[in-house]
Length: 235
Image 1 (cartoon, rainbow, N blue to C red):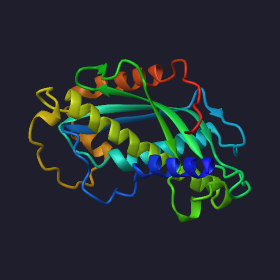
Image 2 (image 1 turned 90 degrees about the horizontal axis):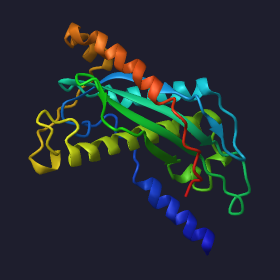
Image 3 (image 1 turned 120 degrees about the vertical axis):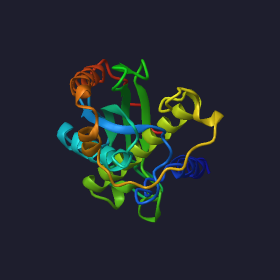
């Protein structure tokens, strides 16, 4: 019974993250447009009973997931996203209903306002990600999926959770509002679907901000290499 409740709890947690919405209208993020997408893994830690994945593999997976999700925005201001992959578990095959392995990922996120040349969150925001629950992974992805598929799912879930966090920050603090007021305090404008990439947004920006963008990206990379948060056990 305890194991059943634990499994149901995991289903409820992961059900809140649906990364399969990239072909839909992007969730409202005010004037947000992706500048630099910086992913590093200086303190990467492999959890117990996990398949191994290199820093380069995680950086590539997270960079693609972040680009796929945030390059859809074409707001009027540039923001840089710095991600530090801290720890992971890529489930290995186990015994169904006895040792049902689950995959997890933990990372830190820092947001930079290009125009202001400063961080929006003074301390990195920690995101803990669990694999999505579906028929093939109900008993653990280690039983049915390759390492590459597990990393794809975790990275996409992580990018979606980061988007959710940015939405909350904009709703409560007005991070991406021209007047700096919380978005929840006013009517939200409709956001049209867009296929513009972050590179296009950067090219169309004022050339005078190029130096600032570069300096911010370097600073973002330095910040996310600060002492890491030890990977937390998946709940």
